[in-house]
Image (cartoon, rainbow, N blue to C red; front, top):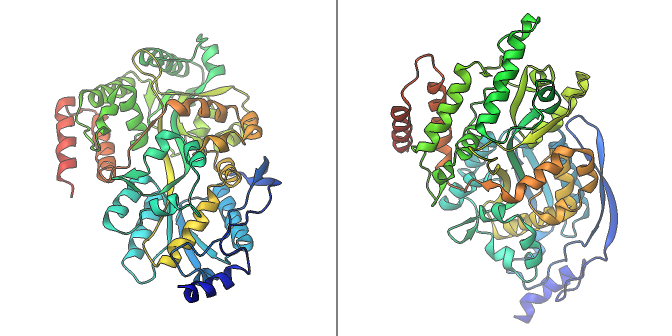
Length: 466
């Protein structure tokens, strides 16, 4: 026993003590982040303690950690992608184990999932993946990714209870599946409406809409204003730009009280609330208060007062700020929860998490060490500012005061987050989403299928998908 541990201690002594972790003294740093526009922003100074070096208590060949190469794939692009690359470079230079992280990015969550899945069928597996919890749930069930519980609870390497409790409860709970820890959250996103407050006041509304009836009145008034002004080019615009993506549709369903659709670890779209949400959106369309955009991005239309309200997520707002600035539009705009029947509904939240692939024990440990490093508040803040997203822990949110002061919408988002609703990490979402989007498309046709029939068809289609 002593003979087997001695070489490990000799190796680790190069970097630290063998039996006792030696944390580096606290230090203050100021860091710059890159936004989607290429500009830089400063993250408020943060005191951090570098993750301690390993001891011989870890059940892996510590000497093998040296020069271990770990491959990670992620969907981040633009500012978030640039900043994540910079974080990787920092880890590669500074980590005492000489672990080297190699990244690749796909540009989308679905493409990331495809590439990761394909690699699992080869001898050249990817080691880590950044994706949504629903994909991690599938891969953990099939054995592609590991349960992170042992790493998390390890007294030497794990996360202290105080740090774990700092994670937003709704976000953290989606990482638990059948008592297994399938991933660690790294980014939180919100679904909401963007509302032109300045234009609404000119239309005679002093208060943002809180109910579905309020919203309908304001959208229709904006459409009426554009249809009957002297500008021909904006005819047919003015209300809400129709968005048929599944997160938006689920937000509408949630606003009509349909969160029971994903309760008890199963998805049931065939319910009264789904039909009511679809009927409401159909009504907006028939009244001319919602319209189809000719381009994918709604920001130019919003900046040109061709939409009073658009659906958006947090990363969209950095681009919206740029679009409004380019258009020299000084209108004030705010973000709103989707309205309920009597009051605003809780915002629907989603997020990205990091999972570790089942490969070799030494690779799994090296991947965990990098993941543990990423959870440090300073690193979370850097990535959140670049993406415009909410970090998954309150300790990091507290560090982003400068960013919060510059972007009022981000501060509003943090206030909406504690009461937000997080979609559970259910494998069923992968087949539900396209069926839901197709069902809504059917609802918008000139002669729509009756709502009860449509709901039944959606339900049967979902059940028939393998």
